[in-house]
Structures are given as structure tokens and as C-alpha cells.
Amino acid sequence: MTEAEAPGSPVGRVLLVWDAPNMDMSLGSLLGARPTSAFRPRFDAVGRWLLELAGDDRVAEACVFTNVTQGSTEVVRPWVEALRNVGFAVFAKPKVTEDSDIDSDMLEHIELRHGEGELTQVVVASGDGRAFRAPLETLVRDGIDVMVIGFREYASFAQVSDLIDFRDLEDIDGVFREPLPRMTLDSLPDEGAWLQPFRTLRSLLEKR
Picture 1: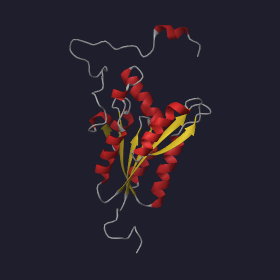
Picture 2: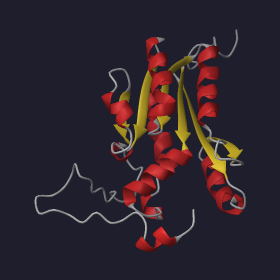
Picture 3: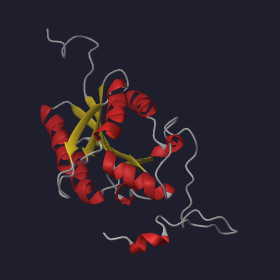
Picture 4: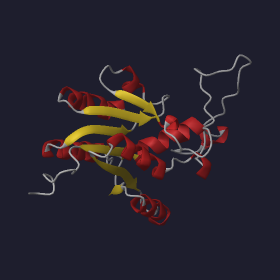
């Protein structure tokens, strides 16, 4: 009897793929600044939530996909090691050109797990509808449950889809130490509110 056939062994797999560049960009845009430690997601909380989602009868697999730009290795290494220490696998790819993104790598890994025949649910952390909406809706039609987690301000593709479930990252217990200062045109108080610039005015003089 193989391990997969043994009584009580997990049957099925819940796969989380986390699009680090997209999630970082979305969070920075939401805050209007580089996130401080109080506003960075806690991956241990994400991991516990994923385990609860999988339950006792399914395997939970958590993967973070990221780019590494030249000269950033020493900054990125502690973060990567922290992820691996809480049970996340990390796919790291050098950012050699503007086209060196990780969307295709994420989709290839999802397809790999789907081809193995044990995949029952996919959770994608990304707001990139251009890359993910069509492939994820195809998975649903193939009988795979699909959920997108992210920020409601930047994941409209999942919220308008009739096939994909969506969950706001802040609604997952313990992911953020403090409430995110979310002020958008959809959540304005009656008295109005200031929306701070994303960049300084002087940045207009900088060469791009």
C-alpha cells in the first residue's frame, strides 16, 4: 500500500501561489508609500488560514513567486529565508529585463499540479486580471475551486467574475498587525478626506 493509499492520508491539494511583485505594488499604491512593518502581511497568518482552508484531508502547498533585481540580494534574502522558515516555497527569478516577470512561472506551476490529478483548489494572491482571469476561469470549468485573495481596490477582475471567489487580504485574521489606512473614492466619509499624492511633485523633474 502506498502512502497516498494509506488510510487517513490527505487526498487532494490546495495550492496557494503568491504574486509578490503585484501584491507589493498594490499594497504600496494602497498606502501611498512604502509599507512599514506594521502594514506588511504576516505570512504565518496566511499559512494558518491556508491550513484551515485545506482541512485535515487535503495537502496545503504555499508558494511565493518573486523577482530579484540586481543589487537587491542582501535586502531580499532575510525575507526569503523568513518565508521558507514558515513553510512557504519560494520561486525567485532574476529581473534581467522588463519582460522577466513571473506570471508564466506561476501559471506553469498551477498547470503542473493540475496535471498531477490531485489539485482541488487554487488560491492566487494577485490583482493581475490580464494574466490570471482567463486561466483561472478555465480551471473552474475543469472542476477546480478557485479563490483570489488580495485588495478589493486592485482585484476587480475576481470580484466581477461569476466563477472566481474573492477574499480581501485584510479580512483574513491576523494578516496585518494594524488596520490598513484605506481611503478611496468608494469609502469617503461625509465630511470628505485628503488623498495624499503617490509621488512628490518634484519627481516630475526626474528623468525616467
